[in-house]
Image (cartoon, rainbow, N blue to C red):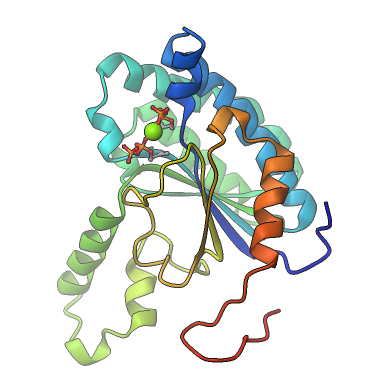
Length: 238
Ligand code: IPE
Ligand code: IPE
Ligand code: MG
């Protein structure tokens, strides 16, 4: 697989299909989430390898809180376990951690861990890893509107750049490529504002089957695209 071409600066992934992966095998859904976590590790390493600057992973949506309590609590434990396990090594590899979403709704241990990860990694110089946890884009936009109102922002001051700075993704470039696994072709309340000019890649692979090779196939597909941003000629990209 040739990956010498243009690498997207920011890749965002809707990691979907864990439950179906497990159900197809007669296993409890949590087994799919465990296998999915292993893939996450593999894809993070692959993204670093090819020079992706920011990788955003949609791990738990605001709507996912409505799942059966047992699945939610097992997922929370799994996310914490996985992050704890990978934390030190990731810091050594230069990763900068960030999280987006209503993190204050997460279990306290997980919140504390995310805070520690952000504090201990913000001086790092490597890839930025953004975890979308308890995240919903409409909610993010509404919270940003709320901030603007409470800051007393006048309409003329409300530019796109300023509004972007009020979102959880403040300071991050918009995603160049959004990948969704599991065959679903929808955005499920992910980065609605930020995805205005993102390229989309959909694959039938379930997340636990989304290998590093599958990730490279997605990047290769992206490399073949022409991004026009509403203009007529291909815009030179860095
Ligand atoms: C994605 O897998 C992980 C989360 C949403 C937490 P799912 O759990 O949605 O798996 P499917 O879509 O039911 O197969
Ligand atoms: C989207 O997947 C959220 C995550 C991958 C975290 P869902 O499985 O929750 O989305 P829908 O319900 O299929 O739209
Ligand atoms: Mg799903």
